Image 1 (cartoon, rainbow, N blue to C red):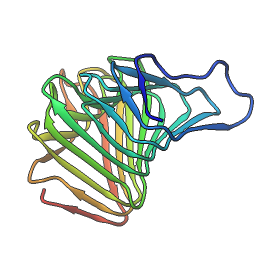
Image 2: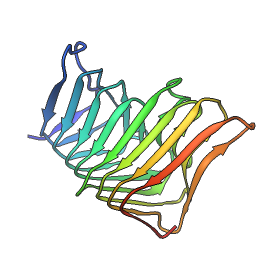
Image 3: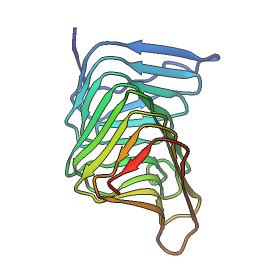
Length: 212
């Protein structure tokens, strides 16, 4: 059966050894959803997820979240651990949400990683309240694309691999396979305000980056 969820998802404790919990139900999130996966705590959502909340998904803590279904949400803030896409995820912005991986404004010094696996699809469409940023304002953000298709075609024409007004920001995009379609928008590297240091790197060992 499908479920409607208004609360957050987390672990009751901190696992002493790695453990993975799997939920294969389809879920409709009726409010912003914070998913907290502690160290050794991994969560796989194998069903389809839908959400129209302005801030649909907030990922925190050091564990791994895997999205394996066909998902339609409006935004995400991936501010801890790893989020892995193995299914089809579309983020269709409504004008208010954001796409951040490693946002130091939300959690100081946080580190977030996004992994796109072979066969997966990630689409960023619609309108957002800010540019798409991996590694922001003192946070660290990494995208690892091992395959699949990532399409960036939103009204915000800039996708930043590192953008900050605060020191200590770092970002990396590892293009190992698959297709990154930028839809004739811009990829910015190491955008800095107030002359602060920021590190941004794109490393391509495979795959195709097109329509830049």
